[in-house]
Structure formats: structure tokens, C-alpha cells
Image (tube, rainbow, N blue to C red; front, side, top):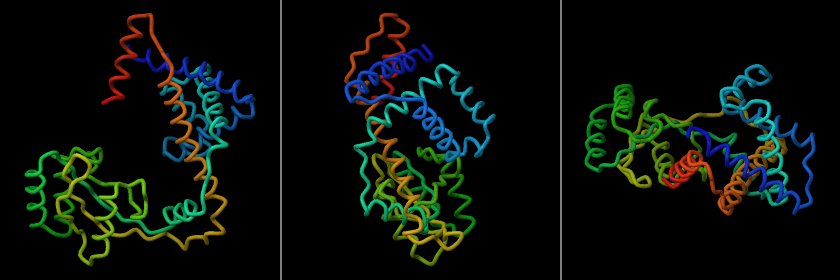
Length: 271
């Protein structure tokens, strides 16, 4: 009941990928598996889960995630297979490269966010925050986010990762308000109540984050940007391919406990 569905899907995906590789006449070798392991390690370093070169720490992360020698090997082969199947379809335009340069080396805005379901509550929080300024407003925003916000950032006072107002991955409603408020002299600056998906939101802009040092030129950064952007787009394409293969497969569990686990996982995804 705890992990049956996940393991069942892994086994099914192994079989589905083997068929897809045969159809595409692609063979996955040991070098592909080694590259998959290196890519997984790099992703954990980027996420801050381990330090670069921390081999023992990496093994501990694998252990905590239930990735013993057999399951890890199968994960790496699946990743290698997915990457091989999507690689030819990944294209990167000049505009994407230039946007990536802006997002990597341009200035960012430090923000905090509160989201609530009720408009009247959002208005009440707005009125209370407008009676304060400076450090007092920041401290009260922190407390109100922890008490009322439905956003995942509530536990850390509504703090968001510093954002670029050019980042298409950030909701347009957030980007536009951050851009408007970041140009004002007063700090910290509070937005009006606005709709963010199905919630009411308040955005507080603390200020801008300038690059720590002079950024490289676009030409000097191009190779690194190309590699990073390709990695991201391949990862997205890999996730989409895995979801499509599993969605098209007719997976039925004969064991009733596995069947319950599979149904529960499917229901959680629909939510």
C-alpha cells in the first residue's frame, strides 16, 4: 500500500521503454548509464541536496530515497533511455538563448507572497499591512503569511526565490506586479489585492538584487547557456514522454493491495 504503485509503474515503464527503444533502433550502453548517473548527481548538487564531489553524501541521498543498487541501476537506464528517445526532438532558438542569458545574469526582484481563498480576508490583511512601513511591515507580513497564506512559501514568511520579471515560468500576474512595484522608491512596497489562479494574493516587493559581479558577455556565456537550456528541455520532454507512455498503457494490478495503491496514486494525480 505504501509504495506498490510506484514500483509497478517503474516496472511497466521499463517494459514500455524497451519496446520504444527497439522501435527506434536505439541501444543503451554502459556509457549512457554513466552519463545518466552524472546528470542525476549534478541535479542533486544544483538542488542543494549534496555538495559537488560528495560521493558518500550522494549515496546517503540514494539510500534515503530507497534507491539500492538494483533500483538505482534501473532508474539510470530509464533516464538514459528517455533522454535518447527525446534528444533529437529538442531544439533551442536564439531567442530562448537570449532569454536564458537575461534570466541567468540579469537583475532579480526579492518578493514575498500571501495567498488566501477569501477576498474579505485578503482585504483585511491589506489594510493592516498598510498601517505599517519598513521593518515593521516586513515582520508583520512574515507573521501573517505563516498564519493565513495557502501558498507553499507560508512556512518561510511568504518569501519567494528572487525572480526575473522576464521569466515566463513565473505567473504573468506576479511578474507584472513585481515589475510595477520594483520601480518605486519606497521599500518594502505592497501590491493591491489581485487574483492569482483561484486565490486572492498580496505581493510585497523588498527590492532588487543586482549581480554580484560583472556578468560575462552573451557570446562568452553562450556554450554554458546552451548546455543548461538543453538539459532543462530534455528533462521536461523526458517527463512528458514517461507520462504519455504510462497514460497510454493499460496497467492492471491483479493483487488487491497493489490495485488499491495504483488507484490511490491515480486519484492523487487527478487532484
